[in-house]
Image (tube, rainbow, N blue to C red; front, side, top):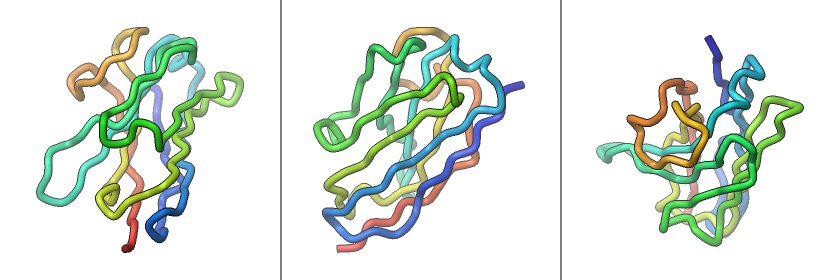
Length: 124
């Protein structure tokens, strides 16, 4: 089974940038869409961004549109989330996931393999 490992989280000041990585243990994930979700304390898991199997289509949640950019490198079995102009409200644990289909999906139930999460904290 494919395993996912996130990295790149940390503490940053508002307005700063971070790049999250999600490395898959197998190239099997290349056949499916992938996505990022986040969850802040006391809140539900929120859709952040998703990318289709080929990398040619991306979709973003309204709260991150224009600030975050998602990409994937199939040769490295890795997905990247570039986060710019970070805000304190972006503070959360960020999870990457592999979808159950090739096209972009935005609901957590459409993803069946999840990473362990990486903490992102944005200070004001």
